[in-house]
Amino acid sequence: MKFSDFVSVKAIRTSLAAKDKPSAISELVDSLAEAGEIQASDRDDIIKALLKREELGSTSIGRGIAVPHTKHPSVDRLVGTVGVSPAGVDFDSLDGDKVQLFFLLVSPPERPGDHLRALENISRQLRDDTFCRYLKQAKSAEEILQLLVDADNSHFGS
Image (tube, rainbow, N blue to C red):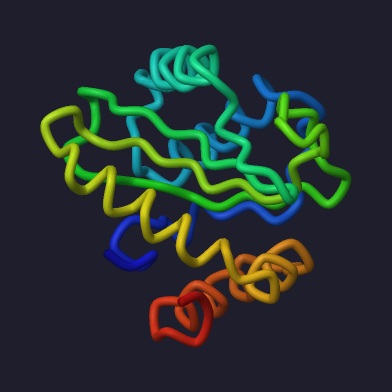
């Protein structure tokens, strides 16, 4: 699975204003709603599902990166977005660092394979420190899109 299969370009955000986990998740879900990827009427329920997933354990994977994700019946296909917080967000990271780079995913419950393949792709690509550094420094959605395309074309990762 490639980033182009699930990342909504219109939902990418390069300057998140959030200072805490609930605000960051809300801001990213709002970006999906504004991009037409989810229904605005499902916003609160999706946020609640993402926060419930966070209660199981932080989706921050260290090195300033988090991958909040959930399954939700309101979506008929996997959707996601990327967010960057130059200042960083307190996200209950195991390493204690603030999170600057977010990949948020929402997938239909009946498509667990898509969900797992997307998480696997994100995880594999985020092992590349150069890729992560470039994403965190990106100033526009277009820059992030180009980095995702490069990653899809095997210019990053293993």
